Amino acid sequence: MHSMKPSLAMKRPRPPSPPLLSSASTKQTSSTPPPKSLHQPKTPPLSSRKPKLHTEWVPLNLSQSELSLPLTFPTGQTFRWRQTGPLQFTGTIGPHLLSLKHLQNGDVSYLIHSSPSESAAKLALLDFLNVGISLAKLWDAFSENDSRFAELAKYLKGARVLRQDPVECLIQFLCSSNNNIGRITKMVDFVSSLGTYLGSVGEFEFHEFPSLERLSVVSEEELRRAGFGYRAKYITGTVDVLQSKPDGGAQWLLSLRKLDLPEAIDALCTLPGVGPKVAACIALFSLDHHHAIPVDTHVWQIATKYLLPELAGARLTPKLCSRVADAFVSKYGEYAGWAQTLLFIAELPSQKALLPSHFWDIKEKKPAKNKRR
DNA sequence: CGGTAACCTGGGAT
DNA sequence: AATCCCAGGTTAC
Image (cartoon, rainbow, N blue to C red; front, side, top):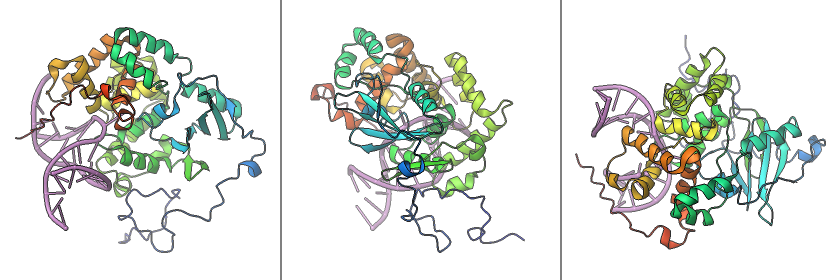
């Protein structure tokens, strides 16, 4: 009674042709052209289709020291934005598709490519950028207690913490566990492609992040086939739990903004695939918990080098994890997560290469990674 | 309760 | 070329 060839069955609701993670594992039935479709006139309808939209750059009242796009978008807070120009990044905020770029003087301006409402887009953008928080003031305070921070801050101005949508943030970081940036980005891209198509900029297509309802139609097996590995069940499991919340999962997540950090973390950790680190990412990057500290291997390195030298050489266990977080909070205070963000970025190989050598040649620790049984 | 092995996958190092 | 190791961890013993 059941078809033995599921790949030939054609009853799919109509998944908007998700991009493939691995080129090898997926074969479309036959006649479908594999990857890119060059014959879809979706590239630049901006002027012809939407004459009402003012597709022009609008300055934001934000200097480079308040927002550096290269230090904010491609540094691991979000995997959804793409670089579409030398100093330009493009992504979506809710139903709005827009680009940000630095002007000659470093100031940031934005361009709305597609949006149901320009005024709503601007409000969403300001909210997303956390513009109410002065980075310069925070960093002055951090610098007073930490000369190394002060020095790094000179070179890495404008590394800002975004205020993302919690569902979007959660799903992204579910993909991040024990994974690398490149593959995380591909996974997030796959999930994103389930959302409404909003437009293309350069070579990239952009979709609104799919609702929980849309996400709930994806099976664990589909995700596995798409290359998610064991994270497939994290996604489906978490979506299921969220869907079971009385007021809806999105609302439930938003309500965590009103809780204290420990309670928010505990709540997040009830979701499958969410542990302390992912929970802290969600708390910091989407739930206004500015002193949440995502303790990953990088932060662990930082902490053992500069904050808790007595722990050098130890393994990163959950308990030590919270101890690291506490150390950051005692040192940097209420906005410790924002300090951690800068220190984390300074550890990224891409940024490290740009810093004067005296920052990182302090003493290359001998790996000593003998995890022999 | 605190400490360790699996867990998917792909790219880079050995 | 075959393995090993690792990547912004979490879960199950």
